Length: 198
Length: 198
DNA sequence: AAGGTTAGAATACGACTGTATCTCAAAGAT
DNA sequence: ATCTTTGAGATACAGTCGTATTCTAACCTT
Image 1 (cartoon, rainbow over the protein chains, first blue to last red):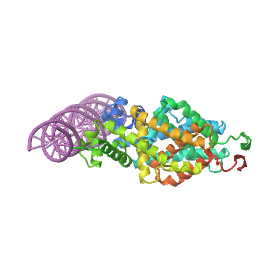
Image 2: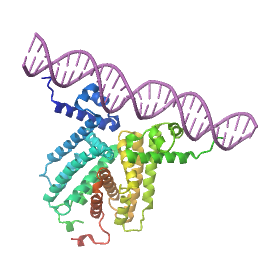
Image 3: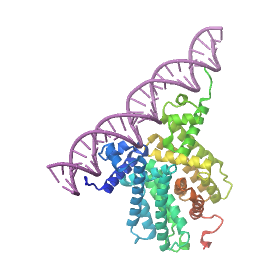
Image 4: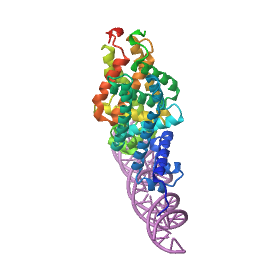
């Protein structure tokens, strides 16, 4: 048989390069040629792994989704709920170069999904997974009622902050304190009786 | 002198067509030619009003920003704070065709701004205006402390919900209840003493 | 009425797009 | 050692992009 290559590994490498390209130069700078150049390949070589640009794009979107879910699984659930939640959200915000790359790609895909049914389906699946993980986590931490709604609110808050950070790097610190304060309000401190505060 | 035409009116008409095009087909379907066709013009006619595509894009972004600010000014501030706030945010969410068009354009521009300094500056200006209006409003309604941070949290929540609604039309109603519940928590009901609840 | 000015259309240009096709070299199987 | 399969590269093609240029027709001013 022929030259044996780990096809899946190659696809992931190309997908990762695409995500980085989206983060650095924006989704509309992504073309078969620019992605190929970013991986040191010829355009024809990329075509061997993705027959169409669209297939390449959806693959990258799934890859980005997997990364987020993996990050969620890595959060230390032994910490107090509010702090763990804070850590979790911070790993999705564009606070440094790596996170910024992922957040940028995520948001670009989300907007693109508005006019791209297959991309929308992928996003919905990822959202569903995140929401459910968050909701069951909240429930086990004592927020039995409306855990799902609370999870959705937290996700929306996080996405909204990430969106804004994309084009206002000056406000990063300020927006992080906004997050803290909002979490303080949304998630009552279990260690303090509510009616004793203030 | 020549054929007299209201240049500014023409520019606004073209800008409006661009926004609608973004909403219906996405930002990367926007070209000088498609915008021209959408206004019943030839590409050359559009060039008379915008020398470059970029100039056309930034103009449309400013136009979209003006629309949001106008909507904010139209909210009935005589209503109870929480309800007025709810109404305000609902007018920015993609609940019907018209609002969906504006929200889609806004979010597309926001993501694009991550790689487009001039667009980012426009977005920052609009954000600043909205935030300040919201903050002074909150202050006058009794939220003297941390009004600015609360305003930012509300904006982020709203943007995050809008983003998600773009690709999950099925969840519109659910996300609206999420909004209501989050607002209930973030904005304590002024008619009820806090320590008397639950 | 003549002339200057501009809106609008048509056209042209080079660059880039996605995709299909072709060639070549390399590697495993017989 | 030969053959076959395949990764990778090169090239080709039709289409679209943004922008510059050219032309015509309509209007206002003098």
